[in-house]
Image (cartoon, rainbow, N blue to C red; front, side, top):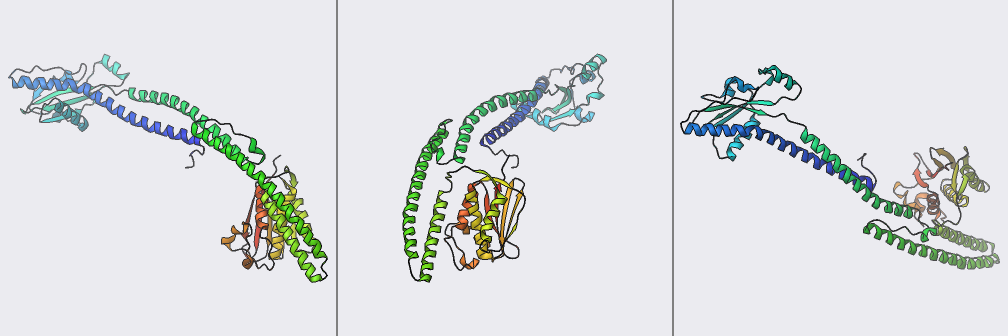
Length: 455
């Protein structure tokens, strides 16, 4: 499967080419067999006719006139003869069973019965050939000379000769020429058809991959066969509907955010006026948590529809800035700053993702180590803690919104459960990936990989 093409065009071309090759191989075998049978029939026909003639003359009591063999061949050593023994056996020629069976079929086709048939191959190099004929034979393939002995029903043996013309390369040349012509014509037409199908599919693939709210008005040109054209038309209609739904979602989220922030702000003002300090602190903290949760929900919902362009960022400096915010409040964060690592992205989103991960590590592991490095074409950020880790079966489920593993992470005060989900969504928005791994001894490692900025 390593050499199997990945594209529809390549697979279609390869399948047709293989099917054509198999068909031509079968045709070649059939053609060679037919050519070989024809070559034998040309040589065996006169032998059958002579044997029938000899049998009829013997039955009628007429003398049998001996006939000479092929000119320049072994027939000069002895004519066609009727004898009491097989010449093939007497002269010790190696027998050819295939030809014997074919000659048996030849007599059966004319409804002429014989007792036995022996055919032996004669070594042409040991045959006396005149010099003028030998020079001619040396420059071309010699014929195949066979000694034929046929026992009639009366018991007599008719001994004769058979000469098969050399097997030519006509069948091979013919099948090669046919194959070249078929491959050229068929694959050329298939290439035109496959390109007509693959081009619209390629345009559709690019449109699906680059889909965004702004691309809703970019209609993919309808082309190709009816099935492909119908698919493109359905995608264009779906793209318009999705763009409209995303627009309505943004308006709805904006309205929700406005409608919820206003009462939360009013509640905070009222809470500040509560005389009981402990009660006032609890109310203000609750309102702050609600506001933070609301911000996380709105941010997570709006991802995938950026309103700002990416720009080159020094990832090392960005992580250092996120760590500094935690150091200011006395958090134990070990920072192994490395060389400058540049990526494309939005600073506010990436910094938020880093803050979420570092905050989680501090909550559950107390001591946190952060590293930034470049690994081939990717930038890598690793955030390690010395906490209890996460069960292996839950390493993916913790990325689901509102997912919390308080038991496994020993968390006394939990948040909204959106931190990891928002961090992974931000990283994937930047064509990267975020994974969690349990360390060999104790603790957890959150690893972010982002594409390096290409110059």
